[in-house]
Length: 163
Ligand code: S3P
Image (cartoon, rainbow, N blue to C red; front, side, top):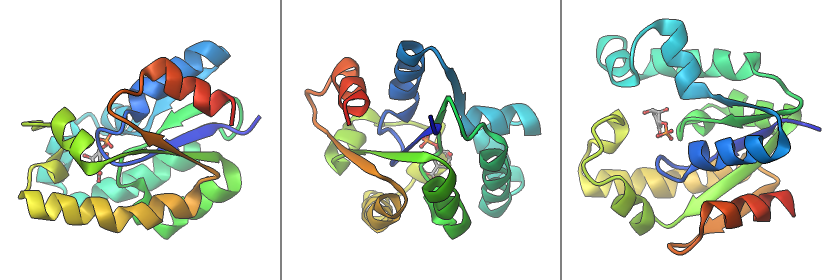
C-alpha cells in the first residue's frame, strides 16, 4: 500500500484526519511540520521569522522525500504544493488525498490563529491564497473530499477508506 499523503489548506483537518486514519489502519503517522520543527529545533513561526519562507520550503521538500512511501499516513503543511517537485513526488510516489473545506469553514476554525505565519494576513490575501492553491492541490491527488461544516472526523475517514 502506498502511503496516503493528505494535502489541503491550513485548517483543513489533515493532522486530525491523518491521526485517525493511521489509528484505524494500524500504521505510522507523520506530520511534515512536526518533523521540520524537530529537525530544525525551532517552531514554524520562528523559522519563518529568522530564516524566511524559502528556507522553510526547502526543509519541507527534504522532509517529504524522507518519509516512507509505503504503509504510512503523511499530513503535509498547506503550502507543500507550492513546489512542483513536491507535487510530482506526491503524484508519483504517494497516494494524494485532498481535504477540501470551503474558505468560510477554514476562517471559522482559524480565527486568531497566530501559529500560522501565512494566516496572519489581511482577509483578501488569505482568500486569494486559498483560491490560487486549489488547482495545485487538485494537480497532485487521486481523491478529493469536500469537507462540510457538519462532516465528522469519523465520516471523513470512512469516506477516504471507501474511496
Ligand atoms: C503553511 C501551512 C502550515 C505550515 C506553515 C505554512 C502554508 O501547515 O506548514 O505555516 O503555507 O499553508 P498547516 O497546513 O498544517 O497549517
